[in-house]
Image (cartoon, rainbow, N blue to C red):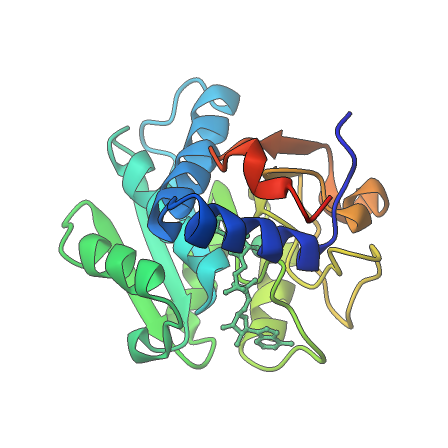
Length: 223
Ligand SMILES: NC(=O)C1=CN([C@@H]2O[C@H](COP(=O)(O)OP(=O)(O)OC[C@H]3O[C@@H](n4cnc5c(N)ncnc54)[C@H](O)[C@@H]3O)[C@@H](O)[C@H]2O)[C@H](O)CC1
Ligand SMILES: [K+]
């Protein structure tokens, strides 16, 4: 197994990939989101009529959820993307780009807001599959609303939960959990295992490492 890395090392590898080797960040997000969709397609042979809900934050973890939802829309499933926040809060160009695409798609239902409305709670409660795209390696400090209530709703649901990169509320470096943490049935993490993911199986489930095409050369000077 390749040596696990910290979130700081991941960010530096991503930065090298982008600025030294010219791999645009939206390509990394596209490959990450495709990997998530591919994992679901292979896990659930029949996706038709399955209700999939992507619960997304306003960072690039959320962006991965937008991309995965677009890839899954091609499989005839009912997809809902829930953005916990406002589109104007989306932090990166690549997340805004992907939000701009899915908001034009009739095959994806979009709901956004800064609080957990009954509509959002009911989508999560009725989901067959949930993509946990709230936070990944960018989690910092105490978990604010509506994220805390969203994590509770995900943990109460009967859905199959796939954590994108890291279960939301899980520290990618230490494996410690914040006051709330998604309990995932599986985790798909990008590029390399994060050091914290060697622990906390109760929250991560089995961990799948997805290569997203960042050139190995991007690791020089970092690992
Ligand atoms: N590194 C790579 O090569 C790739 C990473 N991808 C994905 O990007 C995320 C990391 O994205 P980032 O924007 O840095 O952070 P997050 O999306 O994980 O979270 C930041 C987001 O969450 C908010 N937030 C943070 N802490 C809290 C808190 N305690 N309470 C409430 N809100 C919080 C913050 O404001 C931001 O909005 C990585 O995990 C991958 O999934 C790429 O897409 C693929 C390549
Ligand atoms: K996550």
